[in-house]
Image (tube, rainbow, N blue to C red; front, side, top):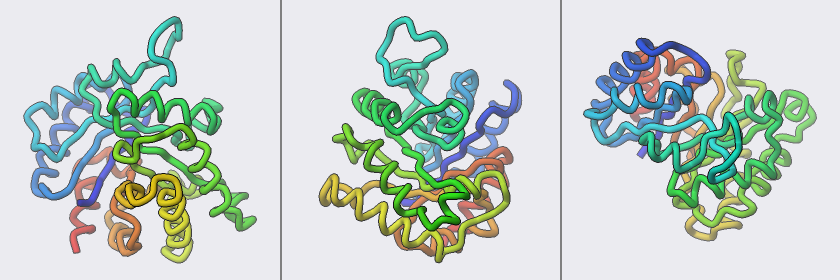
Length: 249
């Protein structure tokens, strides 16, 4: 099974969300063996859920973040229970934009992973290095450290996927080469096996960062990769599903 995940970030309006979800579901049904997940803005969850209601069973709804708290006086926060009630099966944790703009450290992200998994949500944990870290040849060290810290209290590999997103390749048009990413995915796999034993082998590994149809085949040539997390290209249904078409080999 291949995973194709769409992060819509903070884009669109009500008519855009519904139509894009409907169009994506219509085109994605041709790939029944694959799994598609849409992460719209919080305010779009209900509209997207309605659009996907009659979609094929390979379409799933996800949220872009989750609170580490279960309930209470936490203005602006959204709990795992709330997300499940909106029809979410997945949640992003640790996206680089949340780390940078919202100041979310690994210690907080570990609590978010725990809170989401305890409610049965499948966490897509995002990890990745900055340009400076990449140029200083610290990529593997940084990525493994993030992974270990964010999974410190996780005991549910069956509710986990890991998305490696080199920060320097997000929205820049730059794509890490196979030579860049293969040793990193090998290190991610080893870290998961060290923590979870044989169950770690079943954790889906995704690549994100300027993913498009014209580089999907090369990305999926890395043995450890079985999915992609797509940003800008997912805002057009055809462009997004074209990535799935390119990955069929």
